[in-house]
Image (cartoon, rainbow, N blue to C red; front, top):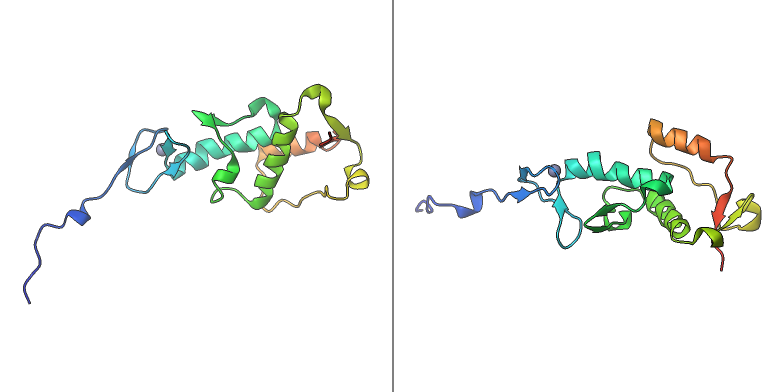
Length: 143
Ligand SMILES: [Zn+2]
């Protein structure tokens, strides 16, 4: 049996440039949109907290990186609960303030609205956001 060619172009690692930390990575990037892709560590340490902040506080919404981003585009990094909650909050944020309807007791008015159990351990920031929002009325979408 003859030895194969010593040149093996497949062995040359492909590198990807992260649009956030600007480092070249051998691991495939997370494609954010048509123009931007970032590495997983950047997504976890930089972008994911922005989604968490946006869900907790309208002031931090929307999350953008060239274009507006939604966590449902990145199911690898978010629980289904988070994506559902974020989608609900986005409905609230995109409703004109004068047209928002808040319900004091959503479980009585809307049987479909149930408090959700959190699967992940909340960070200190989100704990304070949750405790301060407990007494607030809950947004109910209406037409
Ligand atoms: Zn990066």
